[in-house]
Length: 447
Ligand SMILES: [Zn+2]
Image 1 (cartoon, rainbow, N blue to C red):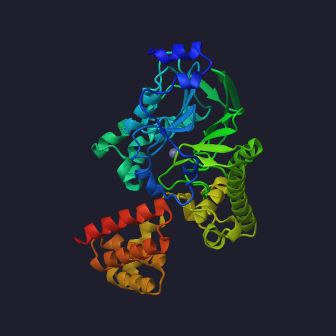
Image 2: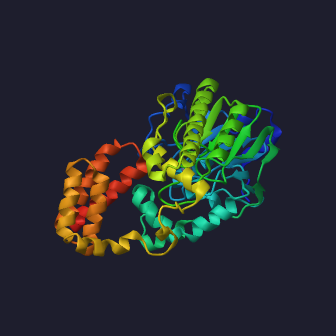
Image 3: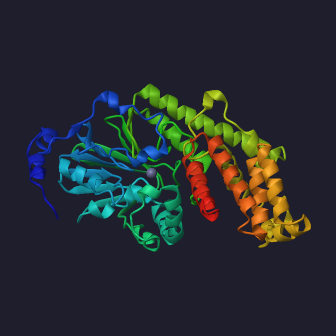
């Protein structure tokens, strides 16, 4: 086990924090720089913190090391408590914290089972480190690891810049395993070196295994990904890269618990901290009320006999509840809430119950309708009418018979470009998916 001279200094002195200042200069963040969260886009994670040469001192005993995901460290007189680890391939995230202070890590708390939050755990775990996660962490880690060969390929579509530069087939090996020593299903309180910690289980926007860490004597809450990565934002209730749905009402309960704490500073594991009780209350309240509004509208719509596609197009947030849809979209949330409660059988067609999808009869429909060129032409007409979604359906029917049909591919390309244009460059997943399909279509056209 590594022991640092600082540990002894900490035990022997009451001025514990100044005794443990690093030899190298730590970048101090001016308070006004603690607030620039609104306006971030997901793609900003590609460059966030890259200009820093050291960890940021948020308080004189709390340090944050920044990258795609941040790692946090609370320095106490009896060792360090690390909250989230960052990505293992972003070594500077680990090194910047160790440069601050390399006393033993007594506790490692991971806020959920996403690799950017615990992937570098082995760099912080020493003999005797308490490794703390949510009671559902092992299940979520287990299925995400089992599906890693597929999920890593999907991540390469949505986060091409964050994937290690190795052959695609080898990516799955990068999804790490972490052994825990303490699982939390409600609250786990401990004191370390005079600092009180309360680790609270709070399912949130990024999974059922969300943890937050509360410092009750300081009014500071480490939020992990409780609400996502920008503040405020619409929660990603089902991520289109593929994962279990996140349930809306447990998310609402978690936000209510945070409101009751009335924190003065939120330290998330992406982007900058959020400072100020009023600002925090306002943002949390808006996110909570936005989800409750959509939730209640979906329930009402279901009971009114409306189908999910009608509700996806009808339900919109009122202006006073508008929140950025940078990761999830409200329309996807509508579908997620619907299927969370009612499952995948929509009772619209008996065929939903059997393993014969509608695409199986596309060739018959195309043959009866005059062939792939007719369908490509009809797709074009729909596109010219400003209906790219319908154009895509018809182009896909044409391509089911003739996968190289140039006219159908041209319509598909134009429809994707129109959807990208209409996206307003807001939602990361939508934009990255459309770009991915545009590149693939252009390649098929030899462009
Ligand atoms: Zn995250």
